[in-house]
Image (cartoon, rainbow, N blue to C red; front, side, top):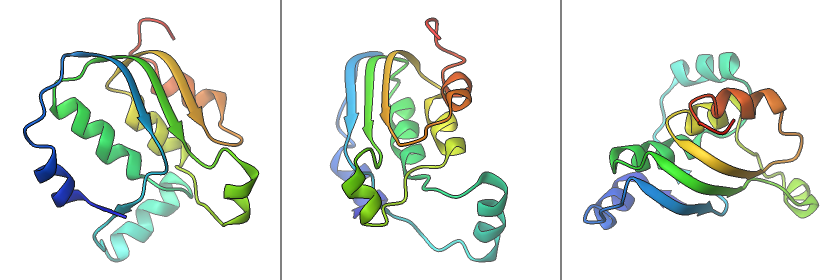
Length: 128
């Protein structure tokens, strides 16, 4: 479990080029603050699933990353993950995470990933 503030502090000095060759994330597990009843209402609207990737992709945007040649995210892609009750990211969170980047190759490893999610998430890419 990763604490957001600790992550930001640990990597505050990193400077990226606006184009990255690749971004690869394993299982994303953030220590999220409790948002109370409002969070429950949002979950109903946005669907079931994690939203942890939003933090990391927003962080990349803050670091002025605009283009990534290849994005890989391990998101419950194996049957062993399903057996462990691993909750993958919601389609909404995936679309929002990818929306601010121009991505050449997307390898988001989620079982039953909806193609519309990819289209919505990569709508800003020059190579949809």
